[in-house]
Length: 320
Length: 237
Image 1 (cartoon, each protein chain N blue to C red):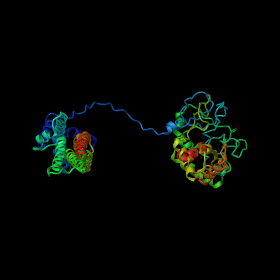
Image 2: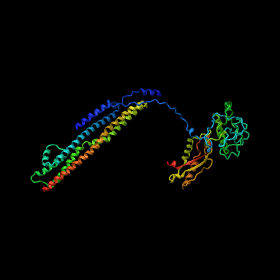
Image 3: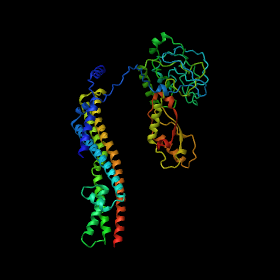
């Protein structure tokens, strides 16, 4: 035993000495100079926004920027040909075609002579269209080319058209709501002096770009906002747990929303399923839609979420 | 501290030589104890390994030599006389034990042959057990070190990293140059644990196998010798 112990101790001491003296130290890493890369943080809406256009168009067209273009106040009755794919919404029209003339009192500063004369908004013909566009009005067509001298004095001239998309309200809204809306508009007009109107694919004479019918002009319904709506509905939804063949239980519900987030019409199930549990799932989905109203959605993008189709898929809910 | 200062301090931080000795000397006291214990365990393991290697080699050669003599046709009485004087191991010990029992049974005038066969078997069994115990002695330590040294080393590493993080928290600087030496010291404990454990495991497996082979060989010889003696007894009855 002694032989083994002595040998082992000697060898260990030798190893330690060798390790301390002869074993090479770790060589330092080579640090090469790396060129720094610029990294931009961009909002995701730039990636997820849908461009407004026609679904059947063949190509994606760049839409002229609308940021700086001011609508010229003088009415230009020249009827430009509307783009074929786009339902024309006359953006820069001041919200004068509201219910009553006295409602329009804040707006006489706007010097548009043409649209004013008929302040009767409940014209029946724009109703069938969802955009509720007072179509046949002589639209004050803005000239696409910016006029700098107009820009300079624009804020004083058009104090109330800061949110033109919010204007064409459906006529069934109540007086009080409209009053509130007007106050909001005044506030917004005071706050937001830049008129983001004019230009755009809407009044372009060029053919429509490929895009969604409800894609953005100004309303940016981003993917995260859609997810938010989905999450709001999903909280109230009790999926058909335990129902077999959850694959056949996809329910698509088409819902129409009011501007305040409440459901305007009874939600409609627009698909059918083969499963025997489909009726239960469909009613669960409609119940969820009704139960969770009002929905918290960005009011200035009402056009984007006025009509929404929601998929209720139990597989996603059940972790499938 | 702004980034420029951080970079400066990182550049100026003394790049201590991370040799094994400094790794040991800079370590926390608990880690030091762990390292010393692992080193001693390694020394003792290697002592056992060397000892057992010598023992097994010698036992094997003794067995070979004895079997050669035993089957050479030499008289058993002569062989017993030549072997009985000195300390024997393995097969020789078996032979001497069995022959001693045989002699004692014939000492007192009348031979006690009735259950001599059983007695000889028992003596052989006891001798085999003693020889195997001698061979297996201290092998358990190898098994223990092989199983537990990595954990002990890991304990040292965890402790070292713990203190390293405490030091980082105290110095409020997470620069890698500050963090790295403490972690390297801590990892050294695991390295030592593996350094002790790997040879121990390998040697234990080898020696356990060798013990099995040698004891099998001894049992085979014992059975053969018992058969020879049993034949002699039956002839004399």
